[in-house]
Image (cartoon, rainbow, N blue to C red):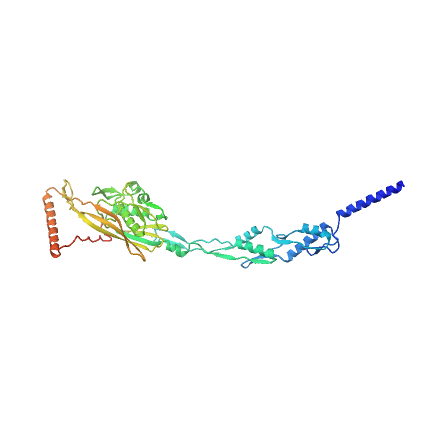
Length: 456
């Protein structure tokens, strides 16, 4: 009896071990399918391997292609893969039958892969450029723009994700042409001639001509950005003998005397007028104490050391380029910038004369000098814009002192007699005019000639 009991116990243990072994290596019942793959009589591990192999074959037979122009980028396994719920499907398959498998096609590192494709077709556009070479007869050269290209990366990503989800096999990228923001026509419009102003000088005064040329060279090539200010004194630097300037006549306290840098005021005056005609804002200017021969009254611009400067501000839409040239007996200032429909002109009006005081007798003077009348004047700027009436702007009112004459010893009476005769002749002319036309009011004196060829 005892032997029988021990044998029964051993059989029970063996059966338990066998059952445990069968539970660990349980197989799927017949007729079990996962995602269309037959896994009947397979262990879970074997079933998983079989399903994965089927998925790989499916992907290998249907790769995904990205088309760009005439190029094709083909994605195959392992870059192309399925994201699935295989573990859940295998668990559900224990009960047998056909179990669906949820799957999504994906590309590993999709965004990086597409970015790499886009980079292959990126071509940077280049806007038109203006080369400014003020020393040349034609100071501007326009470098033509270059068209760029790129792939619409954001759209390509969206289209690729949609095609993968819908089971599509390819997607076509959109290749875009990139037009430069600043084209050739815009570049040319940015260097239109805004104004040109010319004054003339005596070529025989070599030191003065040298100073004019030196200051003009220092300023030519200046580029004034929109909103930027300009200082003539800062632009030329100190006008000293150490920097190459020579002694030539300057005006001081109503007299012409020798001074280093004489003639530079003609450069500042010429630039001043060009700036007015270009529409720049003049923030500082100074009149000479005496009238000058190279420009109309109320349109001169005297500079002197640090105390008197010509300052401008660019209130226009773009850069303004300065070109100053000395040719023969002419100084020409040209200003270039953004094309505008506004134009300007100037008008100088002499409003009165100031008689010179009696001549002074000066011992040792080389020669006598006739006195010169002074004057009062106004400078006007006329602004014109298409579709609008002209606008007259009073810029300034000036007083230019008369210049006392110089008489040599023994010539005092002759000078006074000459002055008396001139006054008598003037009185007779006035009387004759009054007799011809009674009640005439004082008429506005004619404007000074636009550009005088005499210079001091």
